[in-house]
Length: 331
Ligand SMILES: C[S@@+](CC[C@H](N)C(=O)[O-])C[C@H]1O[C@@H](n2cnc3c(N)ncnc32)[C@H](O)[C@@H]1O
Image (cartoon, rainbow, N blue to C red; front, side, top):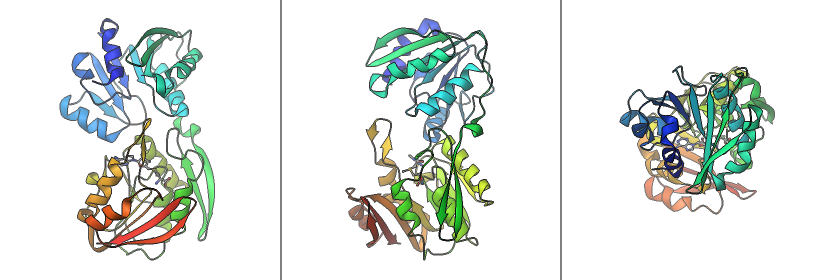
């Protein structure tokens, strides 16, 4: 059981009523709180929750249309995302109660101050290196407009300007990542056919690819509902059309791909986490056609080439700079 769930269960009497658990971990909490529903924006957590508690967890960027008189937000990493989520929940809770739970090292103490926008926050519990806070909502605030919270920036690419739209919580919110920037300079000569931007974030690479290879079918994939929504906004802002899917890991990607292009994930929560990236290197072969290419950017210190060579084929270094490397390998 996640320590934040353990803290909630220390106060289980408070939660025996229609309740929404927002950003909940994929653990047994729903089993212990029979009147609770879940809301998650992580496709992997949603799949795990759905398989154990069918119909009780919902995936997306807005609170689900279920009835609840109280809600618990599991504090996300991004402050802007927490701000949006708290407003979205409070808007559904006139006269209700909004709880916030999080780890101390995740910044719960400071984040609790964000509750002051709705009333006077009270700390209810502190245990397992976590804290639980609560605020009573009087008059509910207006429903926040997610798109209005997007940050937009323009890239001057060789084939013209590209507008990027990033929503709160999405990787590299409001600015171009240096690794992505290096990969954007190395998109020439990809095989034609079905292309995948794996871990698409705001869709910078996918949108650039669709414009560079207009005849190619393009799929963008990310585990995060806010990234998926951002990618759709980025594509629309540039008049481009592509398929955007929410899935956890390369296993959720289509097969028969001509190329997989990626700035793969390397952080998760407060830990550095390479699982999704290592899975990508191990399983890319299964998703590529013969002659298909995996092209990715990685921090120079990451030892990806041996894994790529073991599972796909000879790994070439296409470019290097600013602490990043671009690797390419063909099946
Ligand atoms: C380093 S960011 C790159 C984002 C974007 N491609 C760019 O270059 O700006 C990696 C992305 O992978 C996504 N991600 C993390 N774990 C994932 C998983 N298991 N499956 C799919 N995407 C994942 C993250 O949400 C994030 O958007």
